[in-house]
Image (cartoon, rainbow, N blue to C red):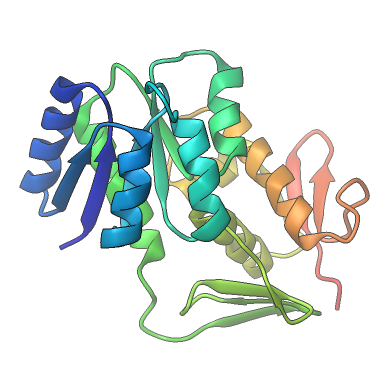
Length: 226
């Protein structure tokens, strides 16, 4: 039974989300502000956090930043009433794995949560992916570069593992949305943000990448360095 922490100061939204998640077999904890969210994460160690962007006091962006500082692997799905692409990108930049824009379908949110949770579940067999000094262990969902652990979010790890498995092939952003995120439709800037964040973590010089390259006119491709 996955444990989901829902952080939203709107009791109507929180109650609807709780009912849908409980019907889907999740255990749900509701809190209404950022400080309570951080305390609940520390005390209860949820499997996933649904986090509203706009809250009084400590807002969702700051909560996400603090969570990422200590728990980079904790999945975070951000709720936002803001429709502008720039606002969604900011959420992704601070480490959200996914976002849903209000007003939203509760069933869509449940499906997004299930998609993220499936990706965090360990596979039945251990798989080690290697590219020189870069190693990704898909069983433990951890990655290392030159022996040092990488603080990757759920989606960053999924993207890295997918690309290492398919070196040399150019993928469009729409391809990557479908293959990594499981979205048939969606904001393709999500991919752009995650590629940029991943480059900052796996490339010696993100401005001159050797692994995660831009395929001009198409999207991105991964080149093995070994």
